[in-house]
Image 1 (spheres, rainbow, N blue to C red):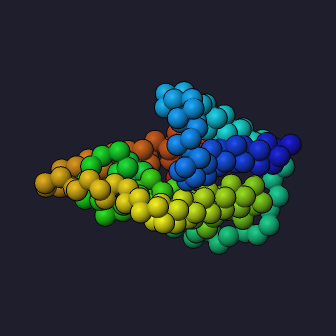
Image 2: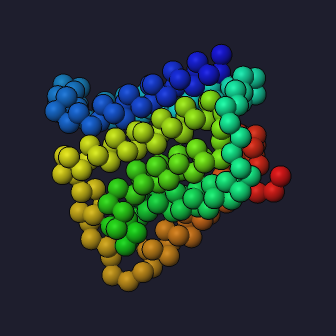
Length: 195
């Protein structure tokens, strides 16, 4: 049951995000319903998909885990290091900085890094579906943005100095620690640090 819920959640969440890349259709919908309603509906459907993903993945891990292969133990350390970078990239999406300008699309870079990191250390079917789908979407979204000529955060030049970059790194590290010490062990059921 959990695997089915996970798949439905992925379909709902990613359908909304892939829809965004069809700019003419999106513009037509916004013209018909208005930007506030469009944004509200987008947020509701995205959150519903995310809730289904979380619930389905938790149910799958608790009751239906299907192990396809066993990654080497050292991959955990690589995953932890990559997720630290992923959180920094995601934070950079919201704060003007040299990091944001350099990455052009820091949110997509963060999602792709996060997904790849988790694929390296998880060999079960549900994890491969979850993280593989997010990695594929991140690659698709980046290619679609490049084809549209969407230069993302690079359109905003980095501010003078490096203060914002330091803030991005510190906040990214803080998010990483909160996820590692609280969210991952208590919500996902898998400790990040220690055994």
